Length: 518
Ligand SMILES: *[C@@H]1O[C@H](CO)[C@@H](O)[C@H](O)[C@H]1NC(C)=O
Ligand SMILES: *[C@@H]1O[C@H](CO)[C@@H](O)[C@H](O)[C@H]1NC(C)=O
Ligand SMILES: *[C@@H]1O[C@H](CO)[C@@H](O)[C@H](O)[C@H]1NC(C)=O
Image: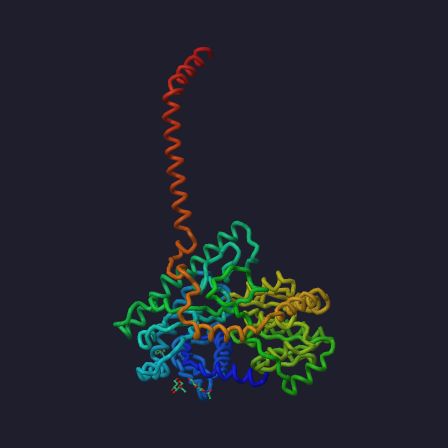
């Protein structure tokens, strides 16, 4: 038996491939997700070249080429983005921000050292597969002008395959990610969802793509329109999962590998472990993720939080908090703060009974995976909708980060910890998520290697080449409506003609005689 397994793994490694990963997405959390796939492929013996604004130390068969100008181009001189302000932007303003980020990230990528290194690779160095983070724009597809057309997989740590171009749009039962709607929408919500989907579609295809194309052509005037390289997408690996995400049909070329970043839990570091083990009445993890710093909430909010947590002294709280100087009062005894938190391992701890979270997608998935109820403090982007989704799954309550009271926070935490329905529902969902033939990461790795073995099999069909109207049969519905209108018009004309022919005069006479009688 052992020798068969050895033989199989030997065969797999014998087919080791040269894989190129490209991303210009300036987001450490997105990279955490993609990185899980890269490491898994590396462990399988493939040779990976990683072109990215986020990098690690290179090692044999895992070469990082740093897109070192992406972050600096976007943040140049300015303060870090104030994500709390994003909360107040409308859809169009937000997409204007995204367009601007895309343009800067494209320019930064092309001017980076890592990109230049890559463009100087010897011509005879061949890649077998490209992995592209499709969350933003197609800027880096320009590398195809150098390496020639080879199969490509689109990846995203985002869970909206429709707007990423990996699937059809289903505005009727998949609310646009920036709307705080449940999947079950009324007519006007569906209309709004359609509108929001179309705004994003138009922005991505007709505003962001050409803007990025223009930048690419400033550096490489002779290459074709950047969107032409989209034909190389053969498959998509999307951070969508079919039990708790909005339900939607997918093409066979889309693999839902949601939550693949969730790691096998490790033992906590000693100081955290002692604190967590001692929280026998319940441990609460509090983290607003990587974009919003807890210490940027302002003194007033911090005071409310510290007071509420202090009153709940039966429980213990672990808070990801960046700088101790910013604390307005002494830390209550039952609260421990730390700048960095092994979130996965804390959520896996048996005493952890609640997660106070910004409801970023990765955190949302981790809480569901470990069956931990959530108090949502969503801030921006898809976070408010993730929070609502958790609420619809009956595992959470939500508060407003810019508008909550000490008592409201106290009561909500108490309710989530003391009403058993939340943990019962969370455990049930966790059980269903664990019940699968192979892990999401194994699945992502499997399908990547499947594509390496079967690069010429088409899993999408003609839909790939259709425009939005054709893909959704809108041209056909419009045609039918048009024919119906013509038929109605012709029937109307015939009826009018027949009416005039047989009844027209008679009626006039009748009207006249009626008048006379009156
Ligand atoms: C590195 O990758 C090559 C294929 O590109 C493979 O043949 C080799 O076994 C890999 N080496 C290691 C140490 O994994
Ligand atoms: C792996 O890829 C790098 C390019 O990023 C290359 O320099 C190296 O020679 C490759 N290794 C093998 C074993 O093919
Ligand atoms: C940063 O901004 C200054 C002007 O404010 C400009 O001169 C400089 O070139 C910018 N640097 C980058 C990397 O964009």
